[in-house]
Image (cartoon, rainbow over all chains, first blue to last red; front, side, top):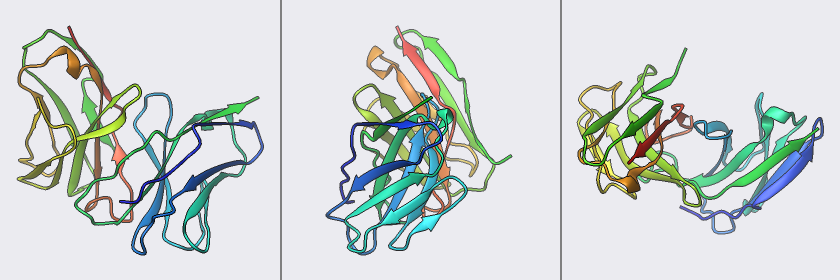
Length: 111
Length: 114
């Protein structure tokens, strides 16, 4: 599975958009980009995934660059409850190898 | 409600006393997995199961056992716990190996071995 690089931490003002970047320059053609988050020692929570097209759901938007070497998770109107560690993972679905969680980005939403 | 249920949420035990952490899911998922999380080391996979009676080692399987006799249950067994197994444990499940649907995680079990 391709490795990912994320900033260690980020801050965001409440009500503003939070843009979390992820670099995955060695991603292969059949690997998807997944995002999870973990709120203070709770179980990680799936947010969104994508292959090459931009994706949006009720939680967030995922923007993947055309060359697929990087992506950005966007929380359009961050709230205090979005304070969490966000993990970007790239992997091939249905692969016997499991997901590997890196260190992630600690997002702090401030009032 | 679709969920992964772990029990207990908190457990303090003594070295060498066998214990089992249970994990159950109600989503008919084929795939289940156990992780441990330690400060500075992130989430590391212990064991996983592709389906009933099919289990395999993850990255840190030493000191742990698992079984998958039913699709919904995937208990984690510590035959002789040691202090270095003090950690926060998570169970997860999904259709196939995560596939296109992502994993559902339990709320965690905080284990302390003294």
